[in-house]
Image (spheres, rainbow over the protein chains, first blue to last red):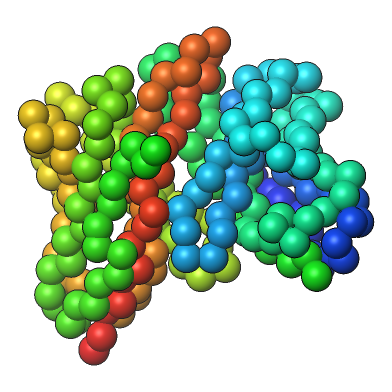
Length: 114
Length: 115
């Protein structure tokens, strides 16, 4: 069965510090991978998605970036965090292809920027 | 532009009652409509989903009703239980090419089931 991991689970960082959040998927190959951000009391905002190693599509221009160095690894980064980067970051995976539908979410990382 | 509108924002239902959450969309390219359930501090989990060629889908106490002509779909939770208290998100899928697709989410409904 497939499993998705995220770490760390919680993170408190000062403004201006760098960020690295990691997501890994087990039990599947060549998945589509997604990063979402969820602000308090709001819906899910798609930040990045990837259909393969080194292939990143950005949905929202901001000071965040994503990378996919391995097939089942997805990393969210920032060089300098802003207060507005606080939120709940969710990684998700889905099968590639036109006739596949569902995205499965990881447990999330709660980021607080002070 | 919010492509999937979800209502109500919050809902309080008594144990044993029916919870109803509604969603509406405009984009006719959407071809798959899942509902996710999220407990505090956890990632969303797929609850139930429907394709637009079906008007209703039932899984246990959870039912999706789909009205393609009205571009609306809803989640019904029968015999609501305190353990159903969570935030529910509707979503709609659109193929974005190159083997990928995107989900557009509603803003969520916080359901509280009181004993």
